[in-house]
Image 1: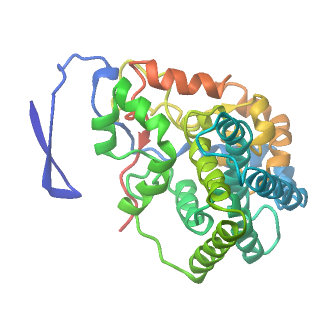
Image 2: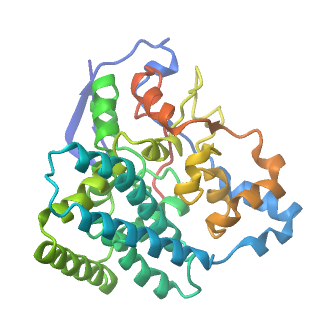
Amino acid sequence: MATITHRKNPSQPITFQTPPADAPIEKLNDFYWTNETEPHTIRRKLILKKYPKITELCGPEPLTKYIIFGVVSLQLSIAYYLRNTPFLSWKFFLLSYIIGATANQNVFLAIHELTHNLAFKKPLHNKLYAIFTNIPIGIPYSASFQPYHQLHHKYLGDEVLDTDVPTKYEAIVLSNVLGKSFFATFQILFYALRPMFITQIKFTYIHLLNVLVQLFVDFLIVKYWGWKSLSYFIFSSFLAGSLHPCSGHFIAEHYIMDPPKTYNRYKDHPPLETYSYYGALNLVTWNVGLHNEHHDFPYVAWSKLHKLNEVANEFYCDLPKHDSWTMVIVNFILDKNVLLYNRVKRETAKK
């Protein structure tokens, strides 16, 4: 046994089982720490040098706002339809899982598009429309997501500023089959709550407006349709981030599913930390599967990511990718070599 004192919490030492010195990398209890810059900035510069016209792909997609309006309308329609349906019924569950979770995952990722200002030219218009897009989620989300997600792009893998990366405590407790099953089932809660414990952001009038609008809409739904309709929204949001095929993208994007057998942060290049997916589920998730492409060019809208890949294909064809988000979840839970430690981390840039 060994005890370490974490530099962020010196009053709370961590005790853990020390692996043998010759243990393979999958037995070592640590992340893939590196001093190297994240790869997307480097690849973006190389692509732009060879294909300067790639910049023409950047900018808003006008179709986005209409698709969002359709998905929000669909969710409102189903919530109304289920207003008298018992929560504990197959009808309620199946509609929530098949349609509700898929639609709300689409809503989550629509807010992701709006976070990058890819529906309207003016940032404020994107923020306000994100508040409308938030309605089927049932709880205020859009205003908080934007600053955290921008930090994720700017400081990929940063131990404090990138709240997409699990904490040391999560990895210690959950790096086993039972723990990974729990994480995969309740991962939406981890993504919602983890940021508040790691990095605090400034509360703005947009946050307040997001809260007030969502609470007002929830009040109207409960008053005129009943609690079952609001339960449909919240249950759909939970399922969208649980054991649902579309939720595989949360794990698929940055977890290292094929870890190297040995790794030394001072001698080795870190494993590639972003995976893409080119399958059919991109049709309902705003092409978020093209994740290397997205991180390279975060201001290229969902509708042009395939074009980006086509133009600069030699930069993407050999990068790691997944064939199935469903199997990503299965392998994440069952593969003993895949742990919550399987993320690249960098020392904090925060001063």
